[in-house]
Image 1 (tube, rainbow over the protein chains, first blue to last red):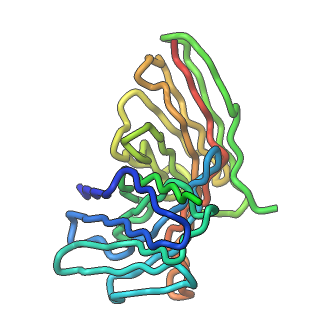
Image 2 (cartoon, rainbow over the protein chains, first blue to last red):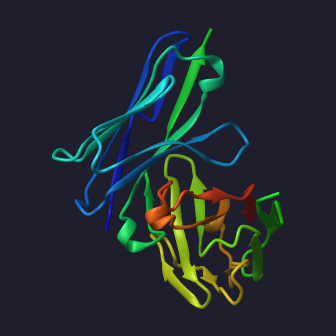
Image 3 (cartoon, chains in turn purple, red):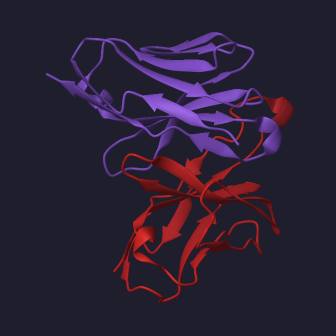
Length: 113
Length: 118
């Protein structure tokens, strides 16, 4: 089955700096890669995603990149703000296998003032 | 309001006492899943369901049962809970937008159920 590795497990940055979270996946059949953000005590929510036919996608201060050959994908947050502090999960999906998602182990991002 | 609900939100129980965590969604989604969240292990899928009466194992199904008799409900059953099932559990629903585009299988999570087994 699919295996998703995520690094780092914790990340501390100063407000205004950039943050990068990296994931690798093992199943070349995975074709959709969402990112979820979980604030303290809350449920995870999808914040950005990328399909396998796209190399990069941006939405304001966040961007995702995908390298299909290397099976790597990354989340980039620029100009970090305190409200970006949360746990971030990457995931890999083979949309042909319905609702089978495999999540990474999560990255706790702390944005300090 | 479109939502996924879970009950109970908090539960403390003892080893071996059968319990059920309910999950319900009002979005008419075909797909539903159960996850457990543990520190350092992320979100791991327990079971998922593609439609009524269609379920399949996720990554950590041992010790759990599910049923999908109605489209809106997807209860998680622990027949004989053990301390290693102490965890935060999330139910989620999703749909496949197909050719209409959108985010395939975006997980709409419930609020979570914190279970402690002593």
